[in-house]
Length: 406
Image (cartoon, rainbow, N blue to C red; front, side, top):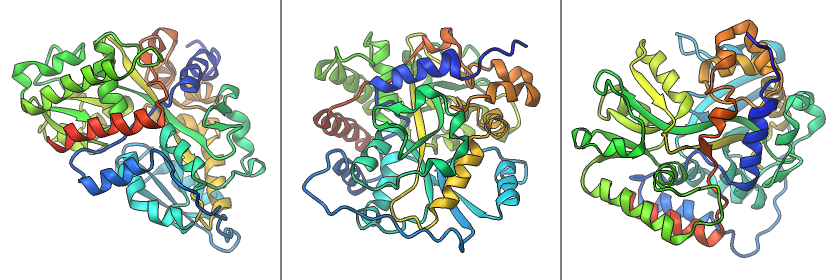
C-alpha cells in the first residue's frame, strides 16, 4: 500500500476548504419529537437580549477521577460484549473512570434537554459532548462552553493545521473535531438488489412506506437540492431553491412514500426492515452491518452529490471535570488510537498520522474512501452553506412543519 500523506493531504485540506465556507452539519430538527422541543431548538437560532456572562465551574478533576462523555450511537469502537476497547485503555492509563453516554440522537433534541442548565451555567451531566459545527458555533457564541487549555492537550499537534481556524472557532479555543462524514443513500441489498444511485430512486412506488430520511435538515434537504441542480455550498441560492426542495420533501411525506424522519435511531428501522432504503450517515452503515453480522446494507453517495459534515468535542460551561475531559481529548488525538476508532466507525478522522497508523491495523482501510477520501470522492460532496439567522429560523420552521405533519 502507498503510505502517502495522511488525512492532512488532500482530504483534510478539501474538507476544511468546504467547512470554512459552510456550517456543515450532521443533524438538526427531529420530526415527531413534539412542538415544544422543536420550539426550544429553534429558539437557539438567534441569541436574543443580553444575558450575564457565565463563569466556568471550578475544576475538581484532581480529586474526582470520573468523566461523562455524551456522544452519538455507532460512534466509538465497541467489542462483542458491548465494551469500548480504546476507552478501557484510557481508563487504565489515567485512572479516570469514564461513563460513555449515548445521549445524542439529534443536535436540537439534545440541546432542548440541556439548554436550561446551560443558561444557568450548571452541570448538564456531561463533561464533554460531541455536536455538529453549527450547534457548536451557537453554544460558543452563547458562552456555554469552556476554553480549552491547549497545554493539557499536547496531541493537538496532530490536528491538521487547516482545521485550526474554522470560522466558528478561530484557533480552536473552544472545540476540537471528533469525526467528519457524508450523508448518502443506504438500502437493503436483499430487497433492493440493484441498489440506489440517486435520491429520486427513493421515490420508486415499490418502496412506498418503506423509506427513511434524516431529521437533519441540511442533509435531507441538501441531497434533494443537489439532485435539483443546486450547489448547496454556494451563496447563489435562496428561498426559491429551498422551497422547491421542501415542496418535493412534503410531497413524499404526504403521499406516504417516506415512513420515518429520524436522527441516529434510523438504524433500528433499517435493521428491523421497517425501512428498506434511507438517507443515512456514511460510517453508520458499516456499524449496522457489523451488528447484523452480514453485509446486508449498501451505501453510496448519490450521483448528484452528497453532503459533508463535522462533529466536534466541546466542554460545557458547568462541567467540574474539565482537566479530565482534556485528557480524554488528548488521548483520542493519538494517531494509533484515532486509527483504531476510524477502523470501527468508518468516519473521517482529523488526526494526522492516522492513515500511517492504519497501515498496521488494517492496510485495506488506509484506502477506504469513507475514512480517507481522495480528491475524486471529495469532489462528489458539498458542505451546506452558512445560513443567516433569518434563514436558519425560516428554513428550520419549514422543514419542521413538514416533519410534524408526517
